[in-house]
Length: 295
Image (cartoon, rainbow, N blue to C red; front, side):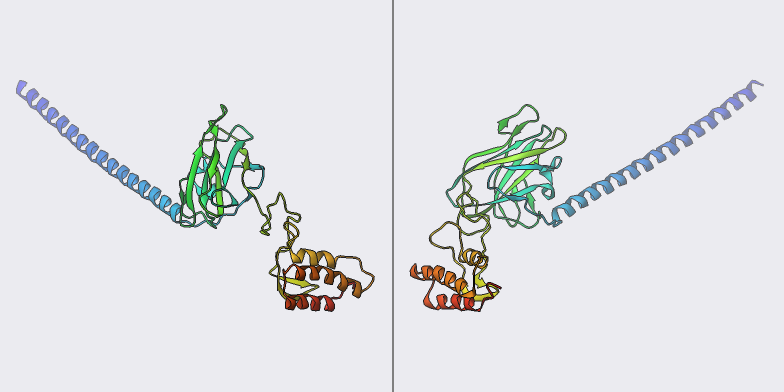
């Protein structure tokens, strides 16, 4: 009887060993399988992240400039933590001459913004390759600045004070949020030393008598193209020859002869000042004679 009991106990013990061994093997296999799946998932996730990064770097997104830096720029806002995504930069431009000394300060007008800015030489039509510290293929990176003015609400406000422009041409200023503290993210830009010429007539806006001059290539009168180059007149700042012809066309005349005499008075002055040649004077007067003014 004792022998039978020993045999029974031995069989039970062997069965338990086999069960535990089998269970352990199954558990081990399952764990390895799970680890393998997790490893595959990690690789796929990393590959996906890499693809997204490469696609973002290679993506060409068209951008538009908000405006020029001529005075105080207000009523603008930045996107959340946009300094890592040039698609979301706010872009501004201004013209400068090598040696000009400019001041540019970006001040938050609401507490949620951590303002940052980058200055580039040149302009761009898209964000390809542009970062807060690189200008990409179309612009030269000049300066990134952030937190240069103390502001306890959310880090600081950046400034470029006494910055000497290295080249003559058009500059780009990008504004963005670095490490935001909430919403909204409004700001204003204050500048000095930047002379803006909105219409490109060679006269700074602060002195320009006509901010939006007629900058057509040639002088026309009532649709007649004289072929005479449209120049800025010598006796004023920012008034072109076409500006004066446009004003004469709007005059109140009793008859056509009175209009022609008014044009002749102006054109003779240009000829006397050697602004135009005799042939150019005759071409303008021919158009004046053909004009249906007054209608």
